[in-house]
Image (tube, rainbow over all chains, first blue to last red; front, side, top):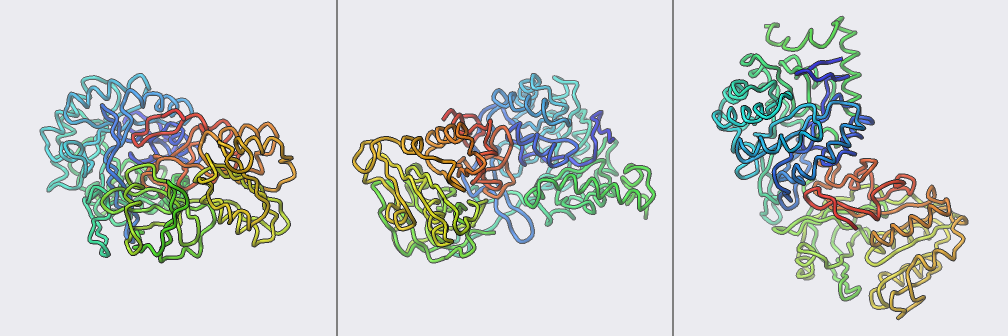
Length: 301
Length: 259
């Protein structure tokens, strides 16, 4: 059993926000058949949003590019999906939320409370949504204010998901911590773009988007490493985790748990695979539990 | 995969609202029932069932398809695919029932042809609003026995494909492949469920797709949570028991919309 900000999880793998999280049924499937220890919903906002036009996601040789544009049905509509996920998933359900300012964040959090989420994850890091996400997450004052505003309306744990597209991610992590965050999640996608050379058109409907998958893992490991050193609160590692080895590496950098997103492309049961791989690794190395090697890279040198 | 560049070699007017675009790339490995994401540059990218290894058949229903209808031979669009799971492969000697409504005939024509080539006996029920809207009539006729229904009675039996289906002994078929408007598929599902042959049936669903590659979750169906773009678009009837089929779908925001 893993405990993270009071959430009890059967293993340290968590479904990342924005992946297979639009419906309650989908979240249940990832938990039950996929083996995730917890699930994070699609980011939910104050009003229904259709997102950017397609193409909204393409696979590249090195990873994935996406610009979904925060499509969501609004908190009012999503409560019923949250209820389904809570009732049938059997794992903690973390609601990812976004807004354009602290008040909107608080409104969305309050609006989702009837669905009884186990925690909130604040999306202040989406790299391609005008006025939302990274527009807020690049500004330490706003991050602190948004975090404090949500903490004001709920006693549930609040995680803050950070963008790597800043000069110093630890400054943003510290702002979240100052605002009362219970954990930070790092990283969201890295700004990126692809161009169709036959036509000259950018491939994504939004022209540019965020890079995820294998290409960003070293970036994520470095961000997690720095945040672990700079903060008192736990760090959840995300970015390019597709195997138990990736997960262990992320944990040695300082992640208390890992989130998996793009890797569901290959198999939805990647969570089971990672958690059983970690178990075997624990036994082989003689560790009593994963906490024995969280942050090990900081001590080993 | 970045979309490949497909140049239109030929445009065929199938009906006033349906056109086939033959392009210069052949998806040799395509399974009938699989789809491609069609990128109309600068507008949108939408899923389309492959009507041949090198063609899509499109009904003009929205912004992206309207833009497609402006394209001429020699113009190009982007293509990603083939994607998703197609119909199961028919074997020699099997009896196959194909039920196609409207533009739903597009992915079923290559399936009927593949079944016929494999040595299966193919029986198709093809429905449309009127005679002029019937899609791929010759292709289905060449693949086996063909029953036609039209809403207005201008060709074949006046009525719906379900009117013909109700009179057939469905238990004699080894596989029943269905694609058409959701309301029609909902009724067919009920009939096949009552006749206890869902295990032999396959339905090709259409839902709003964003990523098209099984990651985003925009097209997941209730209550299974299965992804239409990757676990489908072709599902066994058994997978659709107690599902949202015929009841509701979701729009681009994820909100439920009644069928």
